[in-house]
Length: 127
Length: 141
Picture 1 (cartoon, one colour):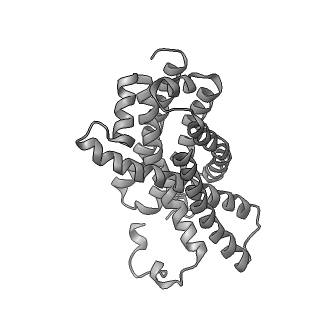
Picture 2 (spheres, one colour):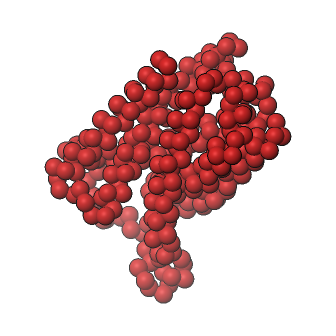
Picture 3 (tube, rainbow over the protein chains, first blue to last red):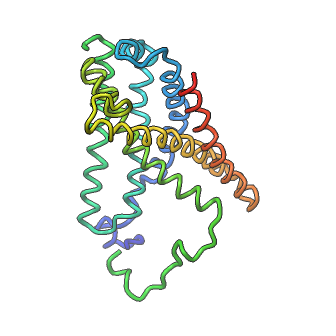
């Protein structure tokens, strides 16, 4: 492993110096989730019915659609960081690492984009 | 990693240690977190995407995830959906309680052996109770 030797640094085996930021964002988004997810759960449970019209009307309201878009950003960021740590712990081979790196940097953004577009479409009356 | 493998002392793995609540909660934190990340966000996106796609898509979601009303495959997935949804609520409560415990540990508190074991156990007590109460409320109201 590159413990600070020059050849280790050239091969990129040392620390990337992103650890503190990763750690801090994981905690910031955790606090966000503590507000956002209970809001979603309680709101859904309290809906008078779960037919299409009721649920659609609820999502379309400003505060729920804002909360849902924040969930798409905050919760997916939190999940991305957590899954990344899990993959780093269990995948040791070079090919697997590159695949994991690709997935962790692509899938969450695609997921968030899909979620946000869906909420916007509901909120602005496209469906 | 590759060159470090041969001839190095191995650290004891899971089966060596006497199990304690902190170990269990640590592993549960990872399992529930990844479960929520894949199944939870997957289901959330299916749900919101179905609403955005219109009444028919939403009906398909409800059918396959909960009621199984259209019969066939939906009956199986609806049964599975209930297990997954109840599992996800438990996973959220467990991950949230364990996460709050981590925030406390981050400021340097709660490392005394007894306190550590007590708060670990309490996260499980909380998550089980919260899940029961949540679904009792959903199904009985």
